Length: 170
Image 1: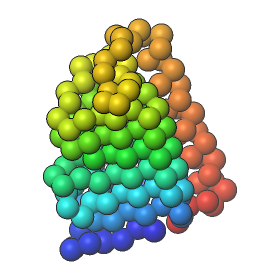
Image 2: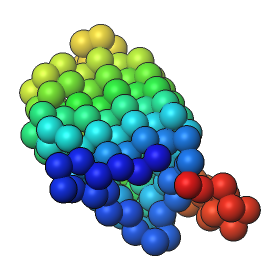
Image 3: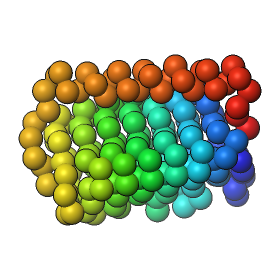
């Protein structure tokens, strides 16, 4: 379901896929080939949410902010993640059930482990793997590991286009 709020209507690139079971409201911008899966909630009522191209917001994620969130290109946000941070750089993987709190900043080409709790204001440098509660930097990621994120993002673009062709969007 896509709804306007206080005169602001979500803007979704025509190539994007939004499940009929997702809820998107207010000041939200979704880029080219991005895909939003069932149960995802993206609430741009308190602040603006910008999602880049080729980004996947998996099932039952919540994206909300009191200010503004910028989510980059080629990002995968895993099932049930809660995103309330300031930004997520390009080419990132946010693991299943991760929680990213207010004003956290995730640099380019990072991985946030499943279940990680990223505390308010944490600034994660590029190519970092973070995990734990509270999240801590565990290692610098190799280009080989980061290539897997791009493969995953590309796979989601492909499957989302299959869903579109089959008529599974709202």
